[in-house]
Image (tube, rainbow, N blue to C red; front, side, top):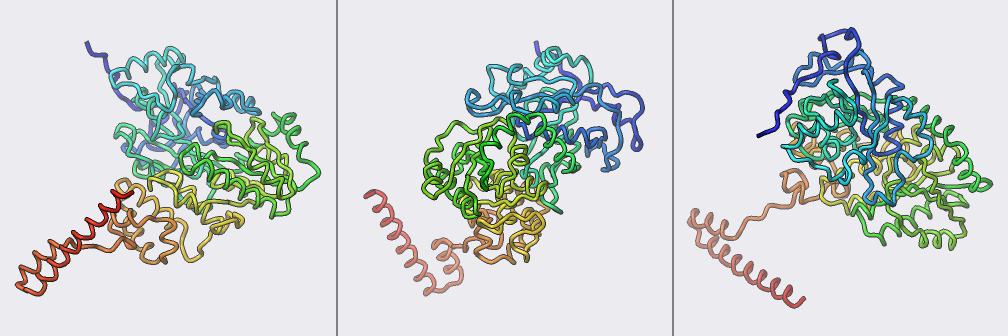
Length: 510
Protein backbone atom coordinates (compact mmCIF):
# COMPACT_ATOMS: atom_id res chain seq x y z
CA UNK A 1 0.00 0.00 0.00
CA UNK A 2 1.42 3.36 -0.93
CA UNK A 3 1.48 6.24 1.51
CA UNK A 4 -1.26 8.78 1.04
CA UNK A 5 0.18 11.88 -0.60
CA UNK A 6 -0.51 15.35 0.80
CA UNK A 7 -2.05 17.59 -1.81
CA UNK A 8 0.32 20.54 -2.43
CA UNK A 9 -1.16 23.96 -1.80
CA UNK A 10 0.12 27.51 -1.34
CA UNK A 11 -0.54 29.27 1.97
CA UNK A 12 -3.38 31.66 1.40
CA UNK A 13 -3.24 34.09 4.30
CA UNK A 14 -0.14 36.15 3.44
CA UNK A 15 -1.10 36.27 -0.26
CA UNK A 16 -4.84 36.77 -0.05
CA UNK A 17 -4.86 39.68 -2.49
CA UNK A 18 -2.74 41.10 -5.25
CA UNK A 19 -2.04 44.29 -3.31
CA UNK A 20 -2.34 45.57 0.21
CA UNK A 21 -1.79 43.86 3.55
CA UNK A 22 -3.47 40.65 4.47
CA UNK A 23 -6.06 40.87 7.21
CA UNK A 24 -6.31 38.68 10.27
CA UNK A 25 -3.70 36.46 11.91
CA UNK A 26 -1.95 34.13 9.51
CA UNK A 27 -1.96 30.49 10.60
CA UNK A 28 1.64 30.12 9.43
CA UNK A 29 4.77 28.88 11.16
CA UNK A 30 8.09 30.24 9.94
CA UNK A 31 11.00 27.80 10.31
CA UNK A 32 14.42 29.50 10.16
CA UNK A 33 17.29 27.12 9.38
CA UNK A 34 20.73 28.25 10.62
CA UNK A 35 24.06 26.42 10.65
CA UNK A 36 26.43 29.20 11.77
CA UNK A 37 26.45 31.85 14.48
CA UNK A 38 26.77 34.54 11.81
CA UNK A 39 23.61 33.23 10.15
CA UNK A 40 21.76 33.53 13.47
CA UNK A 41 23.00 37.14 13.64
CA UNK A 42 21.80 37.76 10.10
CA UNK A 43 18.37 36.24 10.76
CA UNK A 44 17.98 38.33 13.92
CA UNK A 45 18.93 41.45 11.96
CA UNK A 46 16.34 40.59 9.31
CA UNK A 47 13.65 40.19 11.96
CA UNK A 48 14.60 43.51 13.58
CA UNK A 49 14.46 45.23 10.18
CA UNK A 50 11.01 43.79 9.48
CA UNK A 51 12.19 41.79 6.46
CA UNK A 52 10.05 38.81 7.47
CA UNK A 53 6.95 40.92 8.11
CA UNK A 54 6.50 41.49 4.37
CA UNK A 55 5.89 38.94 1.66
CA UNK A 56 6.29 38.30 -2.05
CA UNK A 57 4.42 35.59 -3.93
CA UNK A 58 6.30 32.99 -6.00
CA UNK A 59 6.98 33.96 -9.61
CA UNK A 60 4.38 31.54 -10.95
CA UNK A 61 1.52 33.43 -9.27
CA UNK A 62 3.13 36.84 -8.76
CA UNK A 63 1.44 40.05 -9.86
CA UNK A 64 4.09 42.36 -8.36
CA UNK A 65 7.69 41.91 -7.23
CA UNK A 66 7.36 44.61 -4.58
CA UNK A 67 7.34 43.16 -1.02
CA UNK A 68 4.15 44.14 0.78
CA UNK A 69 3.05 43.91 4.42
CA UNK A 70 1.78 40.53 5.54
CA UNK A 71 0.23 39.20 8.71
CA UNK A 72 2.87 38.10 11.20
CA UNK A 73 3.42 34.36 11.41
CA UNK A 74 1.76 32.60 14.32
CA UNK A 75 5.11 31.22 15.41
CA UNK A 76 8.78 31.59 14.51
CA UNK A 77 11.05 28.60 15.09
CA UNK A 78 14.85 28.67 14.92
CA UNK A 79 16.10 25.31 13.65
CA UNK A 80 19.81 24.93 14.42
CA UNK A 81 21.89 22.59 12.25
CA UNK A 82 25.51 21.77 13.11
CA UNK A 83 27.11 20.92 9.77
CA UNK A 84 30.78 20.56 10.74
CA UNK A 85 32.53 17.60 9.13
CA UNK A 86 33.68 16.37 12.55
CA UNK A 87 30.92 17.36 14.95
CA UNK A 88 32.86 16.24 18.01
CA UNK A 89 35.66 18.74 17.28
CA UNK A 90 33.46 21.73 16.48
CA UNK A 91 31.71 24.09 18.90
CA UNK A 92 27.97 23.28 18.96
CA UNK A 93 25.98 26.18 17.60
CA UNK A 94 23.72 26.37 20.64
CA UNK A 95 26.86 26.78 22.79
CA UNK A 96 28.19 29.80 20.88
CA UNK A 97 28.62 32.81 23.14
CA UNK A 98 26.40 35.85 22.93
CA UNK A 99 23.47 34.33 21.04
CA UNK A 100 20.99 33.93 23.90
CA UNK A 101 19.15 37.22 23.36
CA UNK A 102 19.18 36.64 19.60
CA UNK A 103 17.47 33.28 20.04
CA UNK A 104 14.87 35.00 22.21
CA UNK A 105 13.54 36.65 19.05
CA UNK A 106 12.13 33.23 18.13
CA UNK A 107 9.26 31.50 19.86
CA UNK A 108 11.15 28.22 20.00
CA UNK A 109 14.65 26.87 19.26
CA UNK A 110 15.05 23.31 17.94
CA UNK A 111 18.10 21.28 16.91
CA UNK A 112 17.92 19.43 13.61
CA UNK A 113 20.77 17.09 14.56
CA UNK A 114 18.75 15.71 17.45
CA UNK A 115 15.69 15.19 15.25
CA UNK A 116 17.47 13.22 12.53
CA UNK A 117 20.22 11.42 14.46
CA UNK A 118 22.19 9.31 13.50
CA UNK A 119 22.13 11.10 10.11
CA UNK A 120 24.43 14.04 9.47
CA UNK A 121 22.56 17.12 8.16
CA UNK A 122 24.82 17.41 5.10
CA UNK A 123 24.13 13.84 4.00
CA UNK A 124 20.51 13.54 5.06
CA UNK A 125 18.63 12.60 1.88
CA UNK A 126 15.37 10.80 2.70
CA UNK A 127 13.81 8.48 0.16
CA UNK A 128 10.92 9.83 -1.91
CA UNK A 129 8.48 7.28 -0.51
CA UNK A 130 9.29 8.37 3.06
CA UNK A 131 8.54 12.08 2.58
CA UNK A 132 4.83 12.08 3.56
CA UNK A 133 5.63 9.98 6.63
CA UNK A 134 8.51 12.29 7.62
CA UNK A 135 6.32 15.36 7.30
CA UNK A 136 3.76 13.82 9.67
CA UNK A 137 6.52 12.83 12.11
CA UNK A 138 8.22 16.24 12.07
CA UNK A 139 4.91 18.06 12.41
CA UNK A 140 4.20 15.94 15.46
CA UNK A 141 7.74 16.13 16.89
CA UNK A 142 8.01 19.91 16.36
CA UNK A 143 4.36 20.52 17.34
CA UNK A 144 3.50 22.28 14.09
CA UNK A 145 -0.04 20.96 13.94
CA UNK A 146 -1.78 21.61 10.62
CA UNK A 147 -0.39 25.14 10.19
CA UNK A 148 1.16 26.24 6.93
CA UNK A 149 4.96 26.13 7.12
CA UNK A 150 7.21 28.72 5.53
CA UNK A 151 10.88 27.70 5.24
CA UNK A 152 13.75 30.18 5.53
CA UNK A 153 16.93 28.32 4.52
CA UNK A 154 20.59 29.19 3.92
CA UNK A 155 21.81 27.07 1.02
CA UNK A 156 18.80 25.78 -0.94
CA UNK A 157 20.91 23.70 -3.34
CA UNK A 158 22.33 21.35 -0.68
CA UNK A 159 21.11 19.33 2.27
CA UNK A 160 19.60 19.77 4.78
CA UNK A 161 17.71 22.57 3.00
CA UNK A 162 16.77 20.32 0.07
CA UNK A 163 15.59 17.59 2.42
CA UNK A 164 13.35 19.98 4.36
CA UNK A 165 11.96 21.47 1.14
CA UNK A 166 11.14 17.98 -0.14
CA UNK A 167 9.48 16.96 3.12
CA UNK A 168 7.40 20.15 3.40
CA UNK A 169 6.52 19.99 -0.27
CA UNK A 170 3.72 22.56 -0.06
CA UNK A 171 5.74 25.21 1.82
CA UNK A 172 6.90 28.51 0.38
CA UNK A 173 10.64 29.05 0.61
CA UNK A 174 12.72 32.11 1.40
CA UNK A 175 16.51 32.10 1.25
CA UNK A 176 18.71 33.92 3.75
CA UNK A 177 22.27 34.38 2.41
CA UNK A 178 24.74 36.13 4.71
CA UNK A 179 27.84 35.74 2.53
CA UNK A 180 29.37 36.60 -0.82
CA UNK A 181 28.08 33.40 -2.44
CA UNK A 182 24.73 35.14 -2.86
CA UNK A 183 26.29 37.13 -5.71
CA UNK A 184 27.05 33.94 -7.64
CA UNK A 185 24.89 31.41 -9.47
CA UNK A 186 22.97 28.52 -8.00
CA UNK A 187 25.32 25.56 -7.60
CA UNK A 188 22.99 23.17 -9.40
CA UNK A 189 19.53 23.19 -10.91
CA UNK A 190 16.86 22.80 -8.26
CA UNK A 191 13.86 20.50 -8.73
CA UNK A 192 11.02 22.33 -10.48
CA UNK A 193 8.81 21.91 -7.42
CA UNK A 194 11.33 23.85 -5.34
CA UNK A 195 11.90 26.54 -7.96
CA UNK A 196 8.19 27.33 -8.14
CA UNK A 197 8.02 27.93 -4.38
CA UNK A 198 10.92 30.42 -4.11
CA UNK A 199 9.80 33.88 -3.00
CA UNK A 200 12.49 36.12 -1.48
CA UNK A 201 16.29 36.20 -1.25
CA UNK A 202 17.39 38.09 1.86
CA UNK A 203 21.05 39.01 1.32
CA UNK A 204 23.75 41.16 2.89
CA UNK A 205 24.65 44.12 0.63
CA UNK A 206 28.39 43.70 1.18
CA UNK A 207 29.41 44.82 -2.31
CA UNK A 208 27.87 48.22 -3.20
CA UNK A 209 25.81 48.28 -6.40
CA UNK A 210 26.31 44.55 -6.98
CA UNK A 211 23.17 42.50 -7.62
CA UNK A 212 22.91 38.91 -6.31
CA UNK A 213 22.51 36.12 -8.87
CA UNK A 214 21.69 33.24 -6.55
CA UNK A 215 18.44 31.60 -7.77
CA UNK A 216 18.14 34.24 -10.51
CA UNK A 217 16.64 31.59 -12.78
CA UNK A 218 13.70 31.05 -10.39
CA UNK A 219 12.50 34.65 -10.47
CA UNK A 220 13.27 35.11 -6.76
CA UNK A 221 13.08 38.70 -5.46
CA UNK A 222 16.32 40.01 -3.85
CA UNK A 223 15.73 41.98 -0.64
CA UNK A 224 18.78 43.45 1.16
CA UNK A 225 19.02 43.26 4.94
CA UNK A 226 20.23 46.67 6.18
CA UNK A 227 23.81 46.52 7.42
CA UNK A 228 22.86 48.93 10.21
CA UNK A 229 20.61 46.20 11.63
CA UNK A 230 23.46 43.68 11.33
CA UNK A 231 25.79 46.07 13.17
CA UNK A 232 23.27 46.52 15.98
CA UNK A 233 22.92 42.75 16.44
CA UNK A 234 26.71 42.27 16.49
CA UNK A 235 26.90 44.94 19.20
CA UNK A 236 24.28 42.96 21.11
CA UNK A 237 26.40 39.81 20.83
CA UNK A 238 29.39 41.82 22.07
CA UNK A 239 27.40 42.92 25.12
CA UNK A 240 26.01 39.45 25.83
CA UNK A 241 29.47 37.87 25.86
CA UNK A 242 31.28 40.86 27.35
CA UNK A 243 33.14 38.88 30.02
CA UNK A 244 34.65 36.32 27.65
CA UNK A 245 35.32 38.84 24.89
CA UNK A 246 36.96 41.31 27.27
CA UNK A 247 39.13 38.51 28.67
CA UNK A 248 40.27 37.63 25.14
CA UNK A 249 40.87 41.30 24.32
CA UNK A 250 42.86 41.77 27.54
CA UNK A 251 45.48 39.32 26.22
CA UNK A 252 46.11 41.70 23.33
CA UNK A 253 46.14 45.11 25.03
CA UNK A 254 49.14 47.38 25.00
CA UNK A 255 50.42 46.39 21.57
CA UNK A 256 49.40 47.05 17.99
CA UNK A 257 47.50 43.91 16.98
CA UNK A 258 46.44 42.32 13.71
CA UNK A 259 43.96 39.46 13.34
CA UNK A 260 44.12 36.52 10.94
CA UNK A 261 40.77 34.86 10.20
CA UNK A 262 41.18 31.17 9.39
CA UNK A 263 39.06 29.49 6.71
CA UNK A 264 40.15 25.80 6.67
CA UNK A 265 40.85 25.84 2.91
CA UNK A 266 42.80 22.57 3.17
CA UNK A 267 39.87 20.78 4.80
CA UNK A 268 37.71 21.91 1.87
CA UNK A 269 40.25 20.42 -0.56
CA UNK A 270 41.09 23.79 -2.12
CA UNK A 271 44.81 23.57 -1.26
CA UNK A 272 47.08 21.17 0.61
CA UNK A 273 47.80 21.44 4.33
CA UNK A 274 51.38 22.56 3.66
CA UNK A 275 50.13 25.24 1.26
CA UNK A 276 47.60 26.43 3.83
CA UNK A 277 50.35 26.64 6.45
CA UNK A 278 52.45 28.70 4.04
CA UNK A 279 49.42 30.88 3.30
CA UNK A 280 48.97 31.57 7.02
CA UNK A 281 52.64 32.57 7.25
CA UNK A 282 52.11 35.02 4.39
CA UNK A 283 49.13 36.46 6.24
CA UNK A 284 51.29 36.89 9.35
CA UNK A 285 53.85 38.76 7.26
CA UNK A 286 51.08 41.07 6.02
CA UNK A 287 50.10 41.76 9.64
CA UNK A 288 53.69 42.42 10.74
CA UNK A 289 54.37 44.62 7.73
CA UNK A 290 51.42 46.79 8.87
CA UNK A 291 53.43 47.66 12.00
CA UNK A 292 51.76 45.17 14.34
CA UNK A 293 53.65 43.52 17.19
CA UNK A 294 51.02 40.88 17.97
CA UNK A 295 49.46 38.43 15.52
CA UNK A 296 46.13 36.99 16.71
CA UNK A 297 44.78 33.91 14.92
CA UNK A 298 41.02 33.20 15.01
CA UNK A 299 40.24 29.68 13.68
CA UNK A 300 37.03 29.11 11.76
CA UNK A 301 34.38 27.65 14.10
CA UNK A 302 33.73 24.71 11.74
CA UNK A 303 37.42 23.97 11.12
CA UNK A 304 38.92 20.71 12.38
CA UNK A 305 41.60 20.98 15.03
CA UNK A 306 44.92 21.83 13.38
CA UNK A 307 48.40 22.65 14.63
CA UNK A 308 49.45 26.30 14.64
CA UNK A 309 53.04 25.53 15.66
CA UNK A 310 54.49 26.49 12.28
CA UNK A 311 52.62 29.79 12.26
CA UNK A 312 53.65 30.56 15.84
CA UNK A 313 57.29 29.80 15.03
CA UNK A 314 57.15 31.99 11.92
CA UNK A 315 55.73 34.94 13.85
CA UNK A 316 58.27 34.55 16.64
CA UNK A 317 61.14 34.35 14.16
CA UNK A 318 60.03 37.71 12.74
CA UNK A 319 59.97 39.35 16.16
CA UNK A 320 56.24 39.19 16.78
CA UNK A 321 53.99 37.69 19.46
CA UNK A 322 51.50 35.00 18.49
CA UNK A 323 48.13 34.46 20.18
CA UNK A 324 45.34 32.01 19.32
CA UNK A 325 41.83 33.28 20.04
CA UNK A 326 39.63 30.22 20.53
CA UNK A 327 36.75 32.02 22.25
CA UNK A 328 33.55 30.56 20.71
CA UNK A 329 32.11 33.87 19.55
CA UNK A 330 31.74 35.41 16.10
CA UNK A 331 34.86 37.17 14.83
CA UNK A 332 32.99 40.42 14.22
CA UNK A 333 32.15 40.79 17.92
CA UNK A 334 35.79 40.18 18.86
CA UNK A 335 36.96 42.73 16.32
CA UNK A 336 34.73 45.43 17.84
CA UNK A 337 36.35 44.79 21.25
CA UNK A 338 39.95 44.37 20.12
CA UNK A 339 40.05 47.18 17.59
CA UNK A 340 42.77 45.56 15.46
CA UNK A 341 45.05 47.58 13.23
CA UNK A 342 44.40 45.17 10.37
CA UNK A 343 42.26 42.09 9.63
CA UNK A 344 43.68 39.53 7.19
CA UNK A 345 42.18 36.47 5.52
CA UNK A 346 41.96 34.77 2.14
CA UNK A 347 38.39 35.45 1.02
CA UNK A 348 36.33 35.53 4.21
CA UNK A 349 33.01 37.35 4.10
CA UNK A 350 34.11 39.01 7.34
CA UNK A 351 36.69 41.05 5.41
CA UNK A 352 33.94 42.85 3.53
CA UNK A 353 31.69 43.02 6.58
CA UNK A 354 34.16 44.65 8.98
CA UNK A 355 35.38 47.00 6.25
CA UNK A 356 31.80 48.12 5.62
CA UNK A 357 30.64 48.33 9.24
CA UNK A 358 33.71 49.49 11.14
CA UNK A 359 36.08 50.90 8.54
CA UNK A 360 38.78 48.40 9.56
CA UNK A 361 41.92 48.12 7.49
CA UNK A 362 41.70 44.72 5.81
CA UNK A 363 43.88 42.69 3.50
CA UNK A 364 43.28 39.61 1.36
CA UNK A 365 46.18 37.18 0.93
CA UNK A 366 46.25 34.20 -1.42
CA UNK A 367 43.25 34.99 -3.62
CA UNK A 368 45.25 34.47 -6.82
CA UNK A 369 46.59 31.09 -5.68
CA UNK A 370 43.11 29.92 -4.73
CA UNK A 371 41.60 31.15 -7.99
CA UNK A 372 44.12 29.05 -9.88
CA UNK A 373 43.64 25.97 -7.68
CA UNK A 374 39.86 26.03 -7.49
CA UNK A 375 38.39 22.90 -9.10
CA UNK A 376 36.00 22.35 -10.72
CA UNK A 377 35.43 25.71 -12.33
CA UNK A 378 31.84 25.84 -11.04
CA UNK A 379 33.02 25.64 -7.40
CA UNK A 380 30.82 28.07 -5.44
CA UNK A 381 33.84 29.69 -3.76
CA UNK A 382 34.87 31.19 -7.11
CA UNK A 383 32.51 34.18 -6.83
CA UNK A 384 33.64 35.22 -3.30
CA UNK A 385 37.25 34.87 -4.46
CA UNK A 386 36.58 36.97 -7.56
CA UNK A 387 34.91 39.73 -5.57
CA UNK A 388 37.56 39.78 -2.84
CA UNK A 389 40.35 39.73 -5.42
CA UNK A 390 38.83 42.69 -7.24
CA UNK A 391 38.30 44.74 -4.10
CA UNK A 392 41.78 43.85 -2.82
CA UNK A 393 43.45 44.90 -6.08
CA UNK A 394 44.91 41.40 -6.32
CA UNK A 395 47.44 40.84 -3.59
CA UNK A 396 48.04 42.29 -0.13
CA UNK A 397 46.35 45.60 -0.91
CA UNK A 398 43.64 46.92 1.36
CA UNK A 399 40.03 46.18 0.61
CA UNK A 400 38.08 49.32 -0.19
CA UNK A 401 34.34 48.54 -0.40
CA UNK A 402 33.80 51.62 -2.56
CA UNK A 403 36.24 50.71 -5.34
CA UNK A 404 37.51 47.60 -7.08
CA UNK A 405 40.71 46.53 -8.76
CA UNK A 406 40.29 47.16 -12.48
CA UNK A 407 38.55 50.49 -13.03
CA UNK A 408 38.11 49.73 -16.74
CA UNK A 409 36.07 46.64 -15.93
CA UNK A 410 32.60 46.78 -14.43
CA UNK A 411 32.44 44.46 -11.42
CA UNK A 412 28.86 43.42 -12.14
CA UNK A 413 29.86 42.43 -15.68
CA UNK A 414 32.77 40.38 -14.34
CA UNK A 415 30.65 38.60 -11.72
CA UNK A 416 27.93 37.91 -14.30
CA UNK A 417 30.51 36.56 -16.77
CA UNK A 418 32.08 34.25 -14.19
CA UNK A 419 28.59 33.16 -13.08
CA UNK A 420 27.63 32.33 -16.67
CA UNK A 421 30.78 30.28 -17.21
CA UNK A 422 30.08 28.43 -13.96
CA UNK A 423 26.44 27.64 -14.78
CA UNK A 424 25.68 28.42 -18.47
CA UNK A 425 22.49 26.35 -18.49
CA UNK A 426 21.01 28.33 -15.61
CA UNK A 427 21.98 31.77 -16.94
CA UNK A 428 21.72 31.61 -20.75
CA UNK A 429 20.71 35.29 -20.96
CA UNK A 430 24.19 36.28 -19.74
CA UNK A 431 26.02 34.78 -22.73
CA UNK A 432 26.22 37.92 -24.89
CA UNK A 433 27.47 40.19 -22.14
CA UNK A 434 29.99 37.51 -21.17
CA UNK A 435 31.28 37.32 -24.73
CA UNK A 436 31.54 41.13 -24.92
CA UNK A 437 33.52 41.31 -21.68
CA UNK A 438 35.91 38.51 -22.63
CA UNK A 439 36.63 40.21 -25.94
CA UNK A 440 37.71 43.36 -24.04
CA UNK A 441 39.91 41.70 -21.42
CA UNK A 442 43.65 41.25 -21.83
CA UNK A 443 45.12 37.75 -21.62
CA UNK A 444 46.43 38.10 -18.05
CA UNK A 445 43.11 39.29 -16.58
CA UNK A 446 41.15 36.74 -18.58
CA UNK A 447 43.47 33.96 -17.43
CA UNK A 448 43.01 34.91 -13.78
CA UNK A 449 39.22 34.57 -13.70
CA UNK A 450 38.54 32.13 -16.54
CA UNK A 451 40.10 28.87 -17.70
CA UNK A 452 40.76 28.29 -21.38
CA UNK A 453 39.16 24.87 -21.12
CA UNK A 454 35.90 26.41 -19.91
CA UNK A 455 35.99 29.11 -22.59
CA UNK A 456 36.68 26.46 -25.25
CA UNK A 457 33.79 24.30 -24.08
CA UNK A 458 31.47 27.32 -24.28
CA UNK A 459 33.00 28.64 -27.53
CA UNK A 460 33.78 32.05 -26.05
CA UNK A 461 36.58 34.56 -26.75
CA UNK A 462 39.88 33.35 -25.29
CA UNK A 463 39.21 29.73 -26.21
CA UNK A 464 41.93 27.37 -27.40
CA UNK A 465 42.62 27.49 -31.15
CA UNK A 466 40.52 25.11 -33.18
CA UNK A 467 42.47 22.13 -34.49
CA UNK A 468 41.28 20.18 -37.52
CA UNK A 469 42.04 16.48 -37.54
CA UNK A 470 44.38 15.47 -40.42
CA UNK A 471 41.83 13.03 -41.78
CA UNK A 472 39.31 15.86 -42.03
CA UNK A 473 41.88 17.92 -43.92
CA UNK A 474 42.51 14.99 -46.27
CA UNK A 475 38.81 14.55 -46.99
CA UNK A 476 38.44 18.24 -47.72
CA UNK A 477 41.51 18.17 -49.96
CA UNK A 478 40.13 15.19 -51.86
CA UNK A 479 36.88 16.99 -52.46
CA UNK A 480 38.86 19.94 -53.81
CA UNK A 481 40.73 17.61 -56.13
CA UNK A 482 44.16 18.96 -55.10
CA UNK A 483 46.88 16.32 -55.11
CA UNK A 484 49.24 18.66 -53.28
CA UNK A 485 46.83 19.28 -50.40
CA UNK A 486 46.14 15.57 -50.19
CA UNK A 487 49.87 14.90 -49.97
CA UNK A 488 50.28 17.42 -47.14
CA UNK A 489 47.35 15.94 -45.25
CA UNK A 490 48.79 12.44 -45.48
CA UNK A 491 52.14 13.72 -44.28
CA UNK A 492 50.41 15.39 -41.33
CA UNK A 493 48.73 12.08 -40.49
CA UNK A 494 52.09 10.28 -40.46
CA UNK A 495 53.63 12.93 -38.25
CA UNK A 496 50.67 12.83 -35.90
CA UNK A 497 50.96 9.06 -35.56
CA UNK A 498 54.71 9.34 -34.93
CA UNK A 499 54.19 11.98 -32.27
CA UNK A 500 51.51 9.95 -30.47
CA UNK A 501 53.75 6.86 -30.54
CA UNK A 502 56.59 8.86 -28.99
CA UNK A 503 54.29 10.18 -26.26
CA UNK A 504 53.09 6.66 -25.44
CA UNK A 505 56.70 5.50 -25.21
CA UNK A 506 57.55 8.29 -22.77
CA UNK A 507 54.57 7.39 -20.56
CA UNK A 508 55.69 3.75 -20.45
CA UNK A 509 59.20 4.81 -19.38
CA UNK A 510 57.77 6.83 -16.50
